[in-house]
Amino acid sequence: MAREAWGITADGNNFDTGRRGFLGSSGLAAIGAVIGGVLPLSRNGIGIPPAHAQAAPATAPAPAKGPQYLKFPGKNAGLVVLGEKPLVAETPESLLDDDTTPIEKFYIRNNGQIPEEAKDPDAWKITIDGEVNNKIEIALGELKSKYKAVTRRMVLECGGNGRAGFSPPARGNQWTNGGAGCAEWTGVPLADLLKKAGLKASAKYTAHYAADLHLSGDAGKPTISRGVRIEKAMEPNTMIVWAMNGKPLPNIHGGPVRLIVPGWAGSASQKWLTRITIRDREHDGPGMTEFSYRTAIKPMVPGDKADPANFRILESMPVRSIITNPANGAKFAAGTKELKLRGASWAGDLTVKQVDVSTDFGASWQRATLERPKNKYDWQRWTATLKLPTDGYFEIWARATDSKGAMQPHQAGFWNPQGYGGNAMHRIAVLVG
Ligand SMILES: Nc1nc2c(c(=O)[nH]1)N[C@H]1C(S)=C(S)[C@@H](COP(=O)(O)O)O[C@H]1N2
Ligand SMILES: [Mo]
Image 1 (cartoon, rainbow, N blue to C red):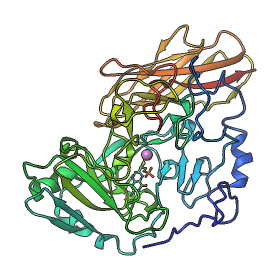
Image 2: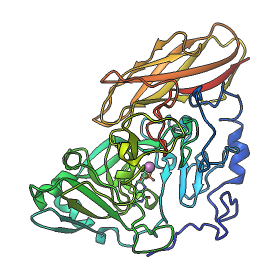
Image 3: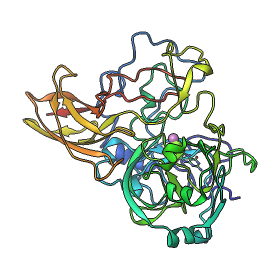
């Protein structure tokens, strides 16, 4: 199997700015002037550290340096690199201002090496086996011609989105809110294939496998292999997709074919999909056990040693809203009295029923105008017009409430070692005059 098409320096240098690196050195100056880093937010900009915060554990990442911008073919130079090996890059909130996230702005999350692009996409084979009556082996070309394709706009969100809000820091990529995007996905419901295969009564869980090599290069080790309860696999919105925004699914996003399991941690949405094995029990592949994609049942002391027996699998993602315009750090002319805000919000398996914004650190709130989703799992765009009493420095905070009444908290709570479920309110700073 392929070495990575886009090289990583052998010395493991994290922030290589060389010709084949993922970082654009020129992008840094150009974009730094527009977004981020210009105005300080009170504390760290993604939630307020809890009063009981303890010393960071030894495994915690080093404090952030300035943002490192992505340099990757077909990708926007405003994406921020969170890791080079494997390649991980997030989309600053202000780049999520389109109703449909363009491919060039869509976040990237890899756990292993990036495979070489498939030479003959339609010959790509997918196997469905395990607790089924008839094993299926189907080429992508056949899947496209024999099954009815559907297109849906749906959010894909990394399970660790919002992790940077945890204090003490949680282990893993320090996503702010940009481990998410909303694209038009075209493919077939996984349920159509599972019905064709015929699920046995023993069918309980899926196990997903793919063609990307483990970082170590060991072909015998899956990079990541997650699965979902059979009910979620049979839900009509869980899809095997080959197109993104009407274009063949790009290699970096798992092309020629991947799973989309909307509303749940993105890790279930296997890229470069080769096999789905139906199991008679919960899956136990890499990414399923101990603290991976799991949250604490009984809330634990932040930073303490965790007990695996107290953890359950993260399924639906929590409610979140982002301000997509203006950008954090935006400056306005003296005398500006009104600000038009735009944003997006979503809530895992649920919908968003309300978004509120504040310019006074949450002392008072104003309701935003919230749009309906196009289809289930689409995000909901929102707008608001804010009156500003004077010139000066303002923070704008946004919070969403889901259809069951759960609202985003002021800070990422319910600490867990790998930092899931962090959905603190999004905050930006603006300066008038
Ligand atoms: N084969 C494979 N599928 C994968 C991954 C991976 O590393 N390998 N990463 C997962 C994770 S953690 C996420 S959040 C999404 C990211 O998809 P994207 O890179 O297209 O944004 O893909 C998921 N599917
Ligand atoms: Mo992820």
